Length: 415
Ligand SMILES: [Zn+2]
Image 1: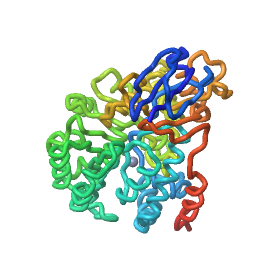
Image 2: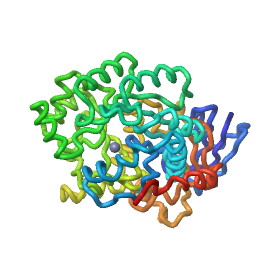
Image 3: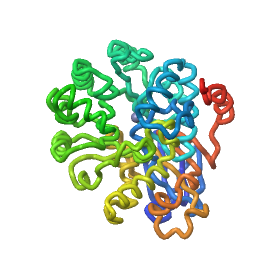
Image 4: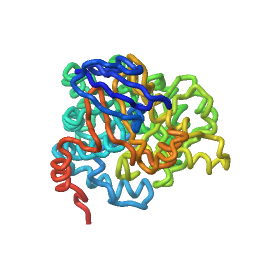
């Protein structure tokens, strides 16, 4: 399958771009090649890499708007967990589809997922055509089958049956929900199978207190002691870190996921960007689940990510639009070990076209600035993932059916 995109703005210049199978195969002027699909940019659309959301719990879209404005503890214990207990694979399937619809509309082509019933999620992801790293969740409460035995079973069953767009990872939920023994098991299993290890880390002060009390050491030091840390680690939130902990994370080349909306909404704290900037720590961006954000829009997340750091440090120069754009593209690709996040020949064809005629894109003096600060998601017109068109001129196949089906579950079990 070949897709030819004509007269598209790439890095400020008009170009043509050819996609062959799932890769970008040619970039140049006046490419007159035969292709099954042709998209006319007419110099009025720009192409950017598809955005990468490194931390979310997609099906929580079914719980959006439930239990807002509470502390993380109350929100989890009184609102979310009692409802999650009742979720079924069918609900997870339609919830994932609905979330993916929102992601595509907002120019996301890849995401890193952590939730229950991964098999139901994978079915939905396959059908929607996005790229994903799906976490097999481990928690000690054995909530909805999240045991290490089950994670291992699902892994063995699926490992050779997945399309190249979907990878499995291990997701021990957090230090306060997974025992030391199970964390060590997860680390060893991930090493043996070469898997990404994703985990919530030092999201709240309470979590650090819990670790100090139980293990007499801070979270990152504890993880180092049990040999958990490595290049395959992707830590969500990572707010309450000391200088010593940051050095340990750097030494082990870990990736961190900054989730500014969720951190602000739950008043968890501020990601320590100022201390991390310039170090050998790969910082990515995530929305967290759509019940604690409450959106899956990475463009607005980029804006919030930049603004929060500026006001927190009282320094407008501390972070730039380019910095946050890299977090949501190149850095995400590095963390998830995929050849995307950049537009170059040989890279995966995960692309987003933005309509430069949208008012938010005027005047087009600085595209990245407009996308980050002026509302990039409103300009997303076409989305391509793995060489397949997922959205054309704002239209996604099957959108109405997904909305109708998911409506049955929305505001699930409230009152
Ligand atoms: Zn999370």
